Length: 122
Image 1 (cartoon, one colour):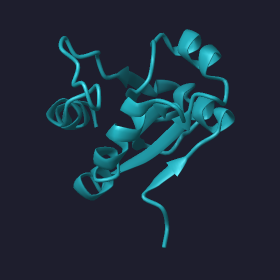
Image 2 (cartoon, one colour):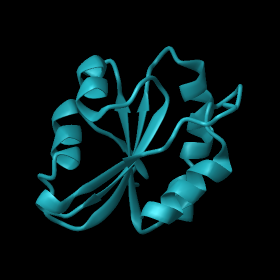
Image 3 (cartoon, one colour):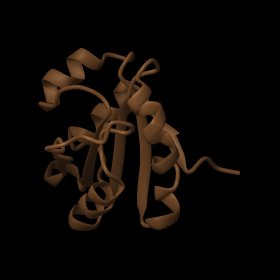
């Protein structure tokens, strides 16, 4: 059985976000840390998303694999963070889910905000 959410390394992440993937896909990436309780709590919901959006590919990137560089390069801060990329080579579009005004104390993001983000940009 193929995993619905694949963990990716820094090289694969950069290929996606830098427009090196020519096939058109909608890709959601969760940035997480092993010791982040918000990230762990968010995982249960994140694992449900591939069943809701079968036309979207889901990945997870561990920030221990060069996270500070990644944060600086792509302009986001902290974990968990979620982005959506519409791949199509040099025309790849990348959007990051905005920080909630009042974060959820357990998962940071709210489920409905994540769904709306995916539905808007996929």
